Length: 376
Image (tube, rainbow, N blue to C red; front, side, top):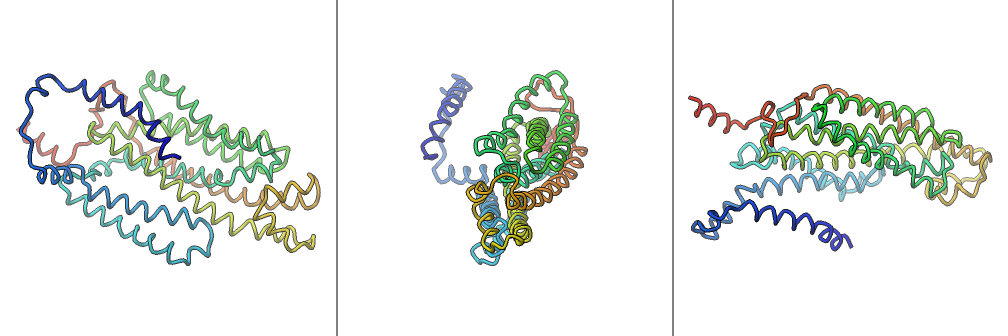
């Protein structure tokens, strides 16, 4: 289905880019057609300039690493499976091979000199940690809302989407403000601080019908915070490079997001599977039903509603879910700390109207030699 939907949705962008490409060609360029090289030379140039080998190495390394993390999750039995461990090990080996290739490539896809800039690795670190932290809670938020907070399925769906809704709204409203203030670091730090507050609210209001407004408020604060630092981080990383590297930096940010999501799913899954079932067994043991704990763990949305609110069984189940939510919230709050440290390491340039932020642009060693030679 998505193989059909994605090209159709991308068609307006493709047409728009094609029209712009046609407009940038001057009449003189169209009249003066250079002699086309041989197809062998064209293929060699294509492979060298696009760094096809580097792209394949990075793609294979990410795929071999992220797919096992996503499939295994927190199930300890799967981590003993060779089908999970083998691609993960291969992926980890491919990363240093990719770095070595980048140092030797004539046209590296990933410019190493940019990764030494503190704004680049700071933004990439934030872009990795923030989906990591959110997925710690967000991965099982729907189950927590239904079982622990007694939301209906419809209301739980709406509350679970509050984060994305608030982040998009705040990000949209932030654009005109940034145009006026021309600074991003303060905005990013404010958003990170709001995340700590939001996760703290979710930690405090964990479970029970009386905590519904608390978890809604926490989700709103977390969404506002994400809108204040996720989009500005994507913009700030583009200020350190010349325009030919901006596309690479943007792709790195989205790659970091994917890595963070995979790590968050893996860690939250491990905590969920290793903790929740044991808590259910302990809290439901006095009722003498040996299969109840497993039934609740396997199908909470169908089993839990069978027990009325306020019943001893329902209270025991809620206590177990509140315990796992407590642990998840603590881990999420701890992950905000390195985000704050990385935010403090960022540069704070005054944004300009030019295509390239010249004051804070990092040049490659080759470009530095050329500029030095020209000045001499």
